[in-house]
Image 1 (tube, one colour):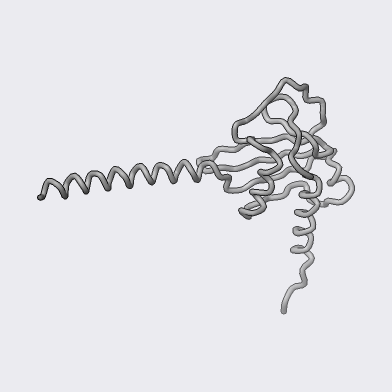
Image 2 (image 1 turned 180 degrees about the vertical axis):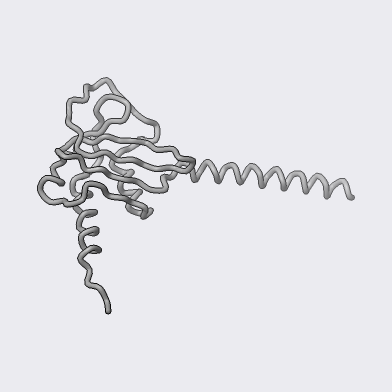
Length: 145
């Protein structure tokens, strides 16, 4: 009977280790945060924004930001020439100091990482406008006395 307890203990220990390793990998696939740099030529920065960098840590906003760049975690590229000026640079920050950098055109319609030009999936410029509105609203919120 004592032998069965040892086998069960070994099995549970092994299962716990495998589960913990799976959880680590799962967390690695999700960014902890992101920073969007608005370059000098960016349409939104020229006309509206006073901010040259936007930091995102909210999970819902991170998901929305990720949605503009399908499969970016695979670092895609293609044979199309990248002929656009960079207007925005997004840095997705992952655990263990891993960072993925995405360069977006000034009109917010195409992006690249390793080479080529990939279409942005959605209205990136409107997303930047929404973020800037939220930042501005926080900064101009009246102080309670």
